[in-house]
Every structure is written in structure tokens, then in C-alpha cells.
Length: 430
Image (cartoon, rainbow, N blue to C red; front, side):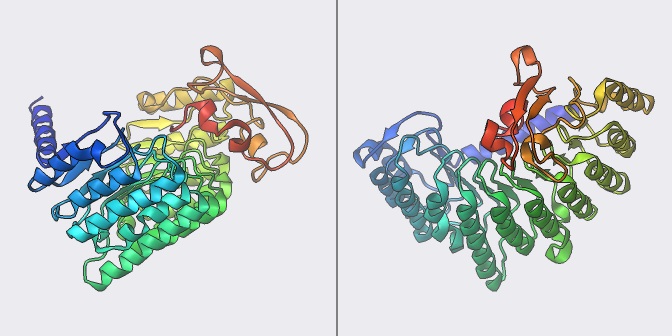
């Protein structure tokens, strides 16, 4: 109890320390079109001595308003944190790059050294990435620790621009004796696909400092997954051993990508959270991951392999693999191809090992051979014909949480083309 109180006090003090140097307009829903509309904000920025963080999320900012705010930021040399998610709602795509360029150039002029750049939920596409390209390449980002670009619609082109900018930033900062050491990278729901993932993998391998990687729902298949695995495995100096959280939910590993990632995980002893849900790791991939878990990952807290077309044998292998993981809090195998008997066998096995409380919900089995590969045309997916695909166990599926039944046409169309992504059906990462 005393430990909990001390921890809560420490968290409170940490938050107070940040907020003391922060200006926040978070969630105020302001429509800031021109210089006149931001006069109050500009005045407060100018008068704030030692400003380190500015929260603009939940407002909508036009080009002229951004330029006025930027001018006020030009003298803020102690500035560190940009919390600028969801601030272009209703704006034209053409407005966003000049607005971002103005703000970024101001930080460079100020001599700021950023630690956090959050531009999530701005849906600015590849052109928006061009709007932060100069900033990312500048000395202002040599100290960047957290880069958050979730749900920005970057696409393959934006992913490549981002990767090139991070690579240049690392090279320039290394030449000055203090290389970029990015710790947190978040870029879910960006349609990066294989080529975008490959480009970013090269940047990750070069940096070698990441602790958290979140790239769910990006349409990445096994070539992209394998590239990411290689980046983790062959990172210069194995500094990637610091990696703690790996979230690639709702991409398409298939067994080849899963096996490659299992090999990479053998080098990542500090990993605490692995989220490969909705990734079609399949039984062979799951068994490879089970072997890695059994041999290493000593502080693993959470393993999510839900909706991966895993059969009973592979699920039992995973159960036995985690039995000695004293830090484990949850094993999620929901929505796999276990069948009713397989679900019961898994529950009984984990209960017999006295780890039954670690097993996540098993709301219903996916009929073997009728998983998402029917939609995705993966490694062993049917190549022709139409048939019902029943997906069970999702939290946002059919009526009253019941099964969702779809029809899988022939061809190579991915789930996102047919249904808007498996997470829309199954309650995956949003």
C-alpha cells in the first residue's frame, strides 16, 4: 500500500513538473483561421517565460493562424514538446504543409531541442510529411525521443519521406557526436504497406535506440514484416535490446513473417509487450514464437496472438511456453481456430499449470480453414471460389457480440479492401 502511494505521488509530481512549463488549449474546439483569431494565444506564448510544451490538439488551425503562432515561438529556445494531434479538421490538404512548415521553421529559428513531436490524427497524407521534413532533418530533432504519427494517412510515399528524413537526422546528429536516439515510434493506420515498412526498417536499423514500436493496421505483409524483423535483429551494436513494446496488430504476417519475427525476438530480452493480434501468424508461426518465448523474453508481460488462425496444438505450445514467465499478465489467443474442444483443452492446460488467470477471453472459435486468409489470399489461402467466412469472438462484430459472417470472393483483395480492415469487425486497435 505504501509503495502504491509513493508511486502515485511520484506520477503526480512528474505531471506537475511538465504542466508547469506547458500552455494547453487542448480540446477547446477553436476554429483558428487568421492572425486575429489567435491573438490571445500568441500573447500568452510571448509572455510565457521558459515555455517547453504547447498543446493545440482538438482545435483547427489555418495557414495564417499557424504563421502567427510560429512567429511567437521563434524566441522559445527551451521548447521541447509539440502536442499537435488533431489540429487540421476541416482544412484543405493544401493548407497543411505550409502551416506545418511555418511552425517547424520557427522551432529551428528558436534553437529548440525537441523531445516529443505528436501529429497524430491529422490525416495529412504524404504532403503533410513533406511539411515536417525540414524540421525532422534539422538540429531541432537531434534530441527527439518520441515521434507520434498515428492515423495520418502517410501512405507508402509518406513513409519513404519520413524514413529518409529520420536517416538524415541520424547522420547529421552522429556527425556532431550526439546521434539521434528515438525511443518511441507510433505510426498506426497509415497504409505504409511493404515498401513503407521496408524504408522505415532501414531507418530503425540505423538508429538502434527504439524502445516502443507501434505500427498496427498498415497493410504490411510478410516482406515488410521480415524487413522490420531484420532491423530489430541486426541492429548496430544490438542497442535494440532496449525494445520494450512491439505492436504490429492487424497486419498480415503469415507464417513466413511470423517465423522471421520469432527469430528477431530471440535478440530482444527487454520486450514486455508483443501485440501480433489479427496478424495471421498461423500455427507454424505461433509455434516458432512459442519456442522463442520459452527460451527468452524473461520480462514478457503481455502476448497477443488473437485471430491468427492458430490451431489447438500451437495454442498449447504457447501455453507451455509462458508457464515460467513470472512477469506475464495476459496471454490473448481469442478468435483462433481452436474449436470448442480446443478452447477447453487450452483452459484446462493453463489451469493445470496454475496460470489459468492469465488467459484472455475465448469467446468463440474460428472454424478451421475459414479464417481471415480466405479474405486475404495469404500463403495458403484458397485461390478461387466464394464461401462464407465466420469470424467469432470480436467485441464489435454482429448483434450482441455474435459471429460476423462475410463472403470471400476469389482474388487477392485484402481485408481492408472488402471490409475496412479486420479491426472494424473484430475490435482490434483503433
